[in-house]
Length: 146
Image (cartoon, rainbow, N blue to C red; front, side, top):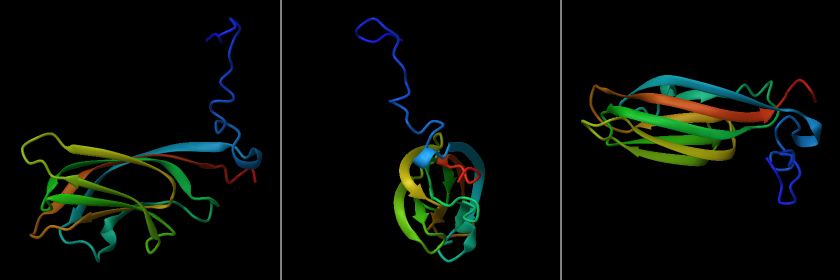
């Protein structure tokens, strides 16, 4: 890559978080993917929490992108909440993903700066479930170089 003046251009300034985060602490990146199957009308059930960071090791909440693919189920819309502060924490990001019967899974993504819990709510009725896939691409300061 060349700069306007013809010399080599470095990418150190455009990506400051890579390898040298807050106060010199390296930034780590992880990717978690999995399938979910949550029961209908699960607003009061713990199965709605499909992922939570390990707070004892990570002193700062994670940042990143969450992608949800809703394959279908009893709910017309799947609600996805990203929370900060655990299961009872505040909601910092929301996705509402409509079911599209007879078609490919409907996918949506959201990027947030701080979250620690992924909640999926299937507010439909019936004996079925809501099924799909989640993928988290997250970044956080290394807990080992503080």
